[in-house]
Length: 358
Image (tube, rainbow, N blue to C red; front, side, top):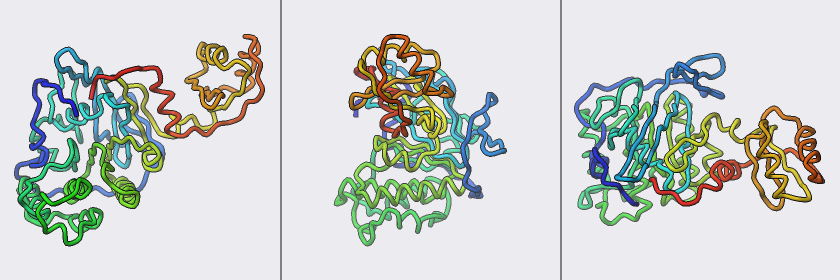
């Protein structure tokens, strides 16, 4: 993975040794019911089903440049308690750079990052309440899996064992291998050990960069169920992934980035279009796409299998037909479309060409 030489960069081994190091008293795990759809207000609160919840993870105007390369530019979004937010984007969109700034591992050139209302910097006390997986597995190779976990936990200043160790090791599924030296682990085993260290502290916040890398389908499913349970228990979860089918089963909200900038954010159901998405079959696809993209009421237009997939919130299909016929385009059929996350993602990011951020 390419890295810029930017100011404030922290070596990745710092992640393995615990970004929330330093002594601190144990905290009570917040519990909460699973929430429905949530929205962020103008005052930075996240709303859901008649209640207002304080923002747990917040990015405001985050920008980061590596030399001449703009990795992230003016990025802002929020994640609330009980939400699973997927941070999505093509390779080079700036997702990992964003997560590093949220964790204090990289200093933003502009903007602020807060977790649980506290400004984030390297070693900030609030990071003791965060479970982290970023930059891939990094362990002391001549130590066992258990010894590595103990080393990471010692940085918190709290007595062994961590409160959720058994559940975390159950998810990792390493069995007796947890007592073998890490240098003999496969990449998938190291990834699962990293997940164990992120989850063993029963964190209030989870920030995970590509957590499903190296996992088989059964392990991916177990991880999905564990993250959903963490959200039901009141945690805020921010996860990046390229496995869009898995994300669609897990996420309540998504943030889409491209070339370091925000493309779209909000509840997953809204961004998928719901009943406002249509498949339109016409006699001139190129002309029809041009006409509909010029319509104010149309949010997005994509071409798939020779048909248009059109998202037009609050617009009846008759209005789309009228616009096309007026422009001289013949319309054969219009049907409602349930867009997949993959379809929505490709529509949001199409036509952007090469990407330079990471």
